[in-house]
Amino acid sequence: MNTVEIAEEIYNLLLAERPADFTVIEEHQTNAWVLYYEPDRLYIQIKPDWQWGLYFGYVGVHITCSSSWDFNLYIPAGTEYYTTIVTFAHAAYNADPSYLDSEADRDNWWYKKIQCAYYSDSYGIHLWWRNPFVTEVDASRSGLFNLEFIQTSIREYNDAQSDIFINVVNHGSTFNDTEEQYNRVSARPFNYNSTTAMWSYPYMAFYSGGNDKTYFKFPWYYYDGGSTKLIPIFQTKRWFYIYKRDSNLLPWDIITWNDDGVERQFMIMDCATGTEAAPSWFVAMPYSSAKPYDGV
Image 1: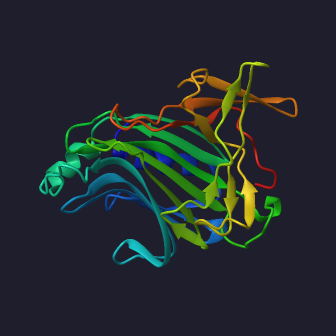
Image 2: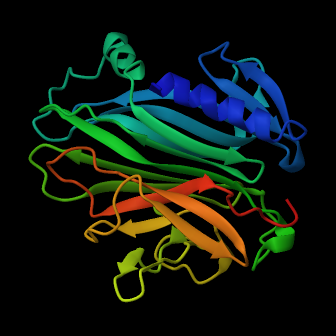
């Protein structure tokens, strides 16, 4: 897939998995796909996007949840919550100021094929991507996009907000940068929108040679994000982190979780984007029989 196809695929998956809940507002007329989510009365715009500047620019998919919609300008209106899947970024090091400042540059990266895999059902969408292109002025990106529907009846704490929980883990590497580059962005209409995560991971999965088992813990979603995280809402059962330095857990391996007699499988996905500053973790996303949520 390329960046534009990822945007369209998220739109198609939402319609296919929950056709009774979504109404089409716009289908790529203004370079975006827009849906109306009936249960929460909110609009979701899925749009291939690009931004640029002197030392930074990016190409990706911008997802906006809004309380209203401007039918004259065809843009989100009212209260807005948003997040971005970053598929390519113009590096902040050795940057050429003109590198990503034209529509030709944008189109060049919009339509480049990148690695992509996804799992979807009526409880959520999980999409992994990996951009293999790295040059001296590029910061390729990889990560995991999670959109889950979690109704109030199954929450630890009912904040009376939307059923929709969106988390994007953007990870990338740059030349001349030995530090890990990551940006965890959460969008929780209509409560939380930040460059810091509304979720936390207690520890990363690891393999035990003593009993031939893998130990992992699912992340929690919180009402209060940032560094506080004292009011948990729900513990996802659909993705988790992998400790990369465990040589027994490798990309594309399958981890099977016995959930009260039901075998649910996860695939380990590689978030490394190059050899310069590869991340110290992988992610595990649903592969088969993902956990359904009661009440959804």
